[in-house]
Structures are given as C-alpha cells and as structure tokens.
Image (cartoon, rainbow, N blue to C red; front, side, top):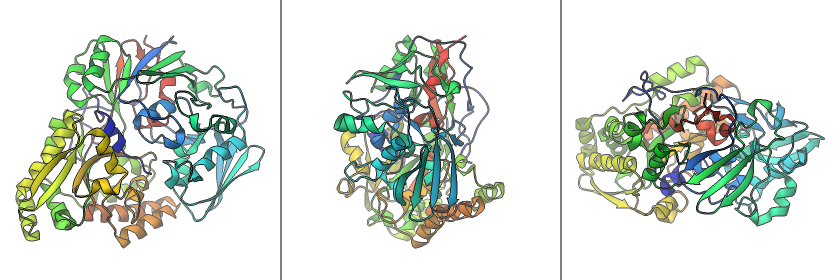
Length: 543
C-alpha cells in the first residue's frame, strides 16, 4: 500500500502547514499564494531536557511497523525503530543500520549490517534480525501495509555474519530507496516471536534500536518514550530523557494546549490557527519540506467523470488559488502535478528543466471549462462528492469543488460521511460505489515520483477509480526497471505526462509541513521525513 493520508484525513483533523514571515516560496512550481519561508533547521538546542510533551492528532491503533503507514504511528516509531537506510530531512538517503550496501547485479541488493548496535533490551543486532524483520512483509498472514514494496522480492537471506542479501524477481529501482522508510524497519527477531499478537500494542510495545525506547502507553490518553542510553549513533543521541505524546483529536484543543504550554509542540498545525499562532507568545510556528499533494480522487470512471474532457473541465473550473487562500491559510501553491518538484531531486538538471515545460496545465478558466463540459454533453448529470466534517480546510475544498462542478453544468451532491466510514473509501471498493470524487492528501515516502505513479498502475489497490492506460503502465514499469538516472527520470516523466493528460486524480495544491515549538524547546528539522527520521532526538532546551 502506498502512502496516503486517507487514514489521516478520515480519523483526524488537519493537514499541514505553518507560518512565519519570509519570501514567497514555490515547492511545486505553482504560483505562490502567500509569502512564507521554509526552515531547514530551527535554532540548535542549548542543552538537555528532562522531558517535553508533544500533541498528536489521533491515537495509533498499533505501533507495529508492518502496519505503520500514516502520521500517528510513524511520527512515534521514527524515534524508536530504525531502518536499514535513513531518509534525511533534506530528502536524501544515507546508510543507517546498514553501514553500507551494494547492487552487484540488477536483481541483487547486499546489505552490510552495522556491528555493535544494541536493541533496547540490550541484545545485539544481527543479520538474523534483519532477515526476520523484512520477511514479515512477505507473509500474507501478517497482512503488512508495506507488502507492495516487496512485490518484486524473490528471497531475503543471511549471506554472512553481518550480511543480508535480497534477490529480486526483476530489477526494481524503488526497493533500495524504500529501505529508508517503513519497509526497511528492523526489530528484534526474538521480540517478534515472543510478543506475537501483542507486538506493537499497549501491552507488548516494541523493542528496536532507536534513540528512544518504548516506555508506556495509556490508551486514550498518551504514549511515553524514554531515552535509550545505549544508542549507537552519537550524532543522534536524544537530548531529552522523556517524550510524552498526548492524544488530542480536537483541533481547537490542540491549539489551546500550544497557547497554554500544556504541550510543548506538535506537527500538523490546524490551518485556521495560523494568524493566532503567528502572534503567539507561547512559541513559534515553522514549516518545511513536504512531498504532499492534495488531490480529488476520481472514484467512478463509469459516470460523468469517465469522460476525460469533463475531468479537465472540472479542474479548470476549480478555484485552486482560492482554496489555498481560504482553506490553507494562504500558505501553499496550486499543484501542477500529482507530485511535488522535490521528489525529482535525483533526476538530471536537464530533465527537471524540461519537465516544467512539458506538463499539461489547467489554469483557472471557468468559461473554457464550461464550453468543454458542454461538448461532452453532461449538463444536469449528478455527481457525488464525498467528504467528512473534519476541519475547515476539508470543508472549504469540497465546497469549492462542488461549486466548480455546478459552474460547468453538473449537478453536484455532497455526501458527508462519518470519519470511520470515510476511511473505508481507501480500503473497500464497495464503499466507493456511487462516489465520484473524494479528497486525499497523498505523500511519498521516498524521493522518487514512482512512489506516486505506481499507485495508479492498472490493478493497483490504490488505483481507486480503476483507471487503466497501457502506455502509462509501460512507462511506470520501465521506470521501475531502470536504475540509470536519466533513463529512469525520462520514463517517470512519460508516466507523469499521461497521468496529467488523463487526470485519474485531480491535483489541487501543495502545502509545507508545519510544526509548532513552544518556548522551552528547539532543534527540530521541519520536513516530511519526520515520519521516518528521529526528529525528537534533536529537540533540546532553548537557550
């Protein structure tokens, strides 16, 4: 399963963004709607902390790494469990529990396991632990959310005292990249065997190698992590002795907790609180790199939106700048693609430059949109737009899309679903019956457009509308099988052009990651990588 914010949207309240004054920034090549500035790193910590508290918008159902594919569990686990490689805040990848790796053949990856690393229970990390951890994703009985990342894996074996070899059925350019995210997580083989079904629960916890260890979990209230004094990496040793994650599902309550100092910080700040928090004396709002795009998923290609002309018309009729201003607090950009520009960082400069010229674009043009829809003959036809009463941003976006549909002659109906039912749109095809559009915030967990475009291949579980295009599939498969950067990027670019020409999903806008830091703490690097990088270890006392 690819990384979606469907679960987040359905269970929680907000999507990202922060605010601080600065120069206009455009991560996605769109026009800037507000002046804002990305922050690579907040001021370095001046010293250690006894503890700090952190708000989290929803309680995880589990912290088992096999099921951690969304914001609540991942922002906790990133500080407790580690992967073979590490996804850094600047969106680069580096060695981690694997001290090195090599690719001797197109279908072979060999990982050298870092020596002298200890799990939180004091036992030493071995190649056997790595094999056991990765193989779980191949077990249908486990039902890993990351199983798709292992779709091309033939075998995972210990090939030396501290060496693991992965053999693929065919070349796969994404596999090694994903070893820096959830799929590459390493847990003690003994713990997995001993805890069984309790693993990742409040009772069983986890036993990994990160800078913090699992402390306690009080269901419905909070989860506590403790500093691991035996952590192997001196550059990322925790500065705080204790971190308490407080479950605060209500957006207003979270903002009040920031203002009162009840909690010291939190990711994903409610967009309608920017003005309030900009002037807050309790702390500061920051924002940083993101790979998230807000999209309307076309869930029914047999109805009026099955005609490509209607999808194009609808996108041209949506006031996306207005959505950014009213729904995203004025901080963000209209999305010209289903991925952000920064996921193309490894592509040659010439390819990145060409991409900006080659993209099919759909500027706001209600008159042209109305004419295009008229040609398609869909006037008066009903479409259903699903939403859930979660936050002002979701409501504003849905209303804007409905208005655009009405403007081009369609008859839109907004179907407001309870959060738990909305989440099933992403997992149950039956739940999507008669739903023409629904909102998602889709992020990538690697710095590669394929993390998005493989989701739209024919038959993919995340291809929610059942879209199918043979040329697109061929381009994606070529990109998967190609390691050479220029050829890989070109295949990705072909897939992107087709997706944007056909619009199985409608890209709306992008926003930066947001984080609020109270006056006691500093040191974090604002970035979407917080889902896999031990961000809490860098937080310490403010000078």
